[in-house]
Image 1: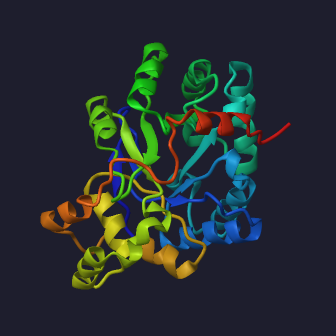
Image 2: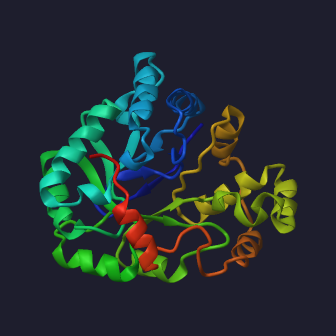
Length: 289
């Protein structure tokens, strides 16, 4: 499988197609998914300490490297800083622990996982780790325009990526317009809306899929690709893992793209990061002692 890339604001390249590991908690299943994904041609993997599977991701990667399927330099490994570890004196240790579990000597992309906690003091430490070569690229997740502006006030290195919820039912239009102005790349989590609102049964999407002899999932992932949005779909089934990345041999017409986008509701049904209850719940959630 060939993979297309996006060029980040620092000149580094990031794959457009990745594999997400949220909610793959069974270690053996996760390790197998990573290994099978690499066999299918996937080169970008997204994990986080809060997913409790970094070690399994690392084992899957190590197995593939040991067997000669891929070299470390060909992979783009993404992990994150949890709220609990945002105080400046905890950041470096969190990075090193992630690298230990992932069995890697550097991280390709390190993201602040949530727009809460002491992230303004995390950022300078992350910048220093970039200067040291421990991290290649740094960014954020789930940051609104105002949170990005706040971070940019203290940043000497602009975030390369803002990983946010993007799918046909929530385009995040205004935020993405600001990100484009600032040359901050989007990355879509939940690119298939986590299956909500019957996305796979949507009649319009099914008609488009049948026309191209593809699945609805492939059509939506192709839509992300054509709009320049890197996406990290998740599946624990080998056939779907392969299917999700087999999207480079067809192209959607502009009217098909527009039809997909006509379903935008303008808000999330999965999580509202502006809700104080969301902040309270996530901030109180501890992933270690």
